[in-house]
Figure 1 (tube, helix red, strand yellow):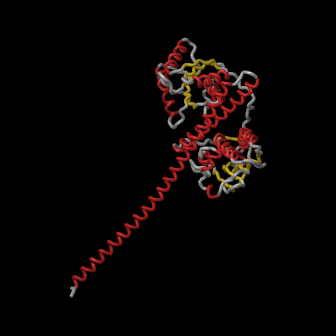
Figure 2 (cartoon, rainbow, N blue to C red; figure 1 turned 90 degrees about the vertical axis):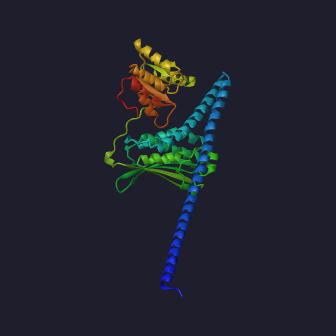
Figure 3 (cartoon, helix red, strand yellow; figure 1 turned 180 degrees about the vertical axis):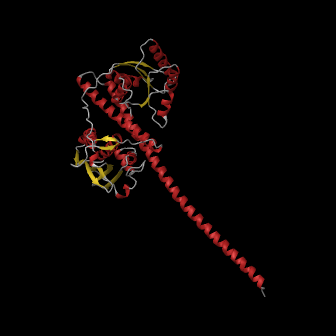
Length: 433
């Protein structure tokens, strides 16, 4: 017969075993949940890997295609005749080269923009801008693309749209150009329309820019990932229409930087509507837009002397041409050591250059060390870094070396003229931003 003490001991052992089983069951459940979570993370990682692989594949195709076109077109251009027909063909070929080069530059810009977004380097301004002028400028730039496809490009602006709002004209223009450009790309017939509407909210009022097309549309299950980087509606989209899959992700981020929202509505084979909404001030805060100079008005020539330090013969030719068009007398050297020697000798001869455009990657002596050496030797003239490097920290590195400003290649003619005006024409208090 079992004693009372033995019975208590058995009960205690049974209780301990039951507790151990409960702990084991709980541990098994935890491990099961952990395995499920790990499986989910694995699937996400695999999906991200596939998306990035597709992105890199598309990127390779997107970059190699215009490069191949440029190289091939140059070969044809070199063989073109000198007669009237040959000259006409040369102009067509040059136009194609420029178009492919512009496309290639836009791809590179999107990659760099994504890097800037990841680094938190984008900031939005708040200055007066005219929403109708922003739209008109976008339409003017893209009308030819629409006409080539036989599409109507329309603007529908409500009467109560303010003449001026506070915002960032550069970012707003970029977003609109991307949205309208996409609408044209994915529309085969019909129209693309930009609507401007003022919308009442509880706190104030908002302005909505809507880009509406009659294009191929987007399936409902694909809308949710439309603004994700490296994504397009589906993989066949990149094969048929091209693109990096970065544009809409960048647009959404830039819109949010401006304090706005970007939304998409679409039906497959029915078209799409992308709506960019920005909060604007009350009507009594409106100010008239600044007048815009006619692009046909020739800019006054700027008499000056410029030293260009650049090792690429092609870049030398381009920069020299643009500077001479602006009125500059140009001297070119192809490394940093020669730039130092020539800048110092010109200064000592009382014929100092008004501006030095300094490439930062050159043989013998690079632009960073050349600029430092000039500053160590009390050279006080203006030095502007003109470089193909556009990654995070590059501007700060150039300024730390002693440069007065930082610009990236290729530099537009208007921007180069602004540099001359800023550093040469005695307007150093003006902003270059």
